[in-house]
Image (cartoon, rainbow, N blue to C red; front, side, top):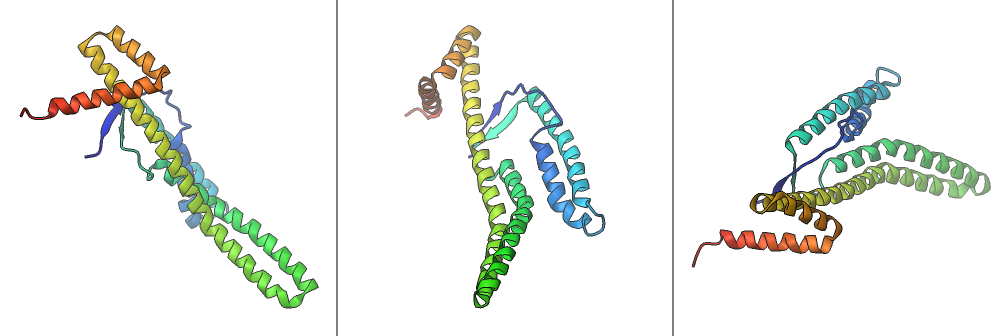
Length: 211
C-alpha cells in the first residue's frame, strides 16, 4: 500500500504559482492549436486565459494546504512537473524546428552552389534534424520535469515523516522535547535519518502479533 502522510505547509498564497504555469502552457499548446486556425495570435489569448484560471486554482490549493496540510505519497516520475516539462518541450519544439530548418536551408543552398549533387543529401539531413527537434524537445522536457518533480516529492515526503515523528514525541513526551528533536533533525541529517528508521522499526514491531 502506498505511503501517504500529511505535510504541514506555511506558504504565502499567490496567483503566481505552479498551476499558473501549467494553465498557461496548456492554454498555449492545446487552445492555441485550435484558436490559431481562426484568430491570429489565438495561442497567446488561450495561454493568458489558462494562466489566469490556473493561478486562481493554485492559490485556492495553497490556501487549502496551509489550513489542512498537503497530502504526500511515494515519489513518482509521473507528476505535475512532468506535465509542465512536457508542455514546455512541445512549445519549444516549434522554435527548435524553425531554427533547425533555417540552418538546413542555408546549408542546402550553400552546398547546392558548390556541389549540386550533394544538395539532396544535405536537405534530407536537415529534415531529419527538424524531425528530431520536434520529437526530442517534448521528450527532453518531460524527462527533466519528471526528475525535478520526483526530487521535490522525495524532499516533501522526508519532511512529512519528520513532522510526524516530532508530533508523536510532542504528544507522548513534551512539546519542548519535540522542538529540540525537530531542530536536531534539521541540522543533523544523519541523526534524523537514524531516528526515523528507529521510529519506523518500533512502529512495525508494535503492530506484530504476540507469539
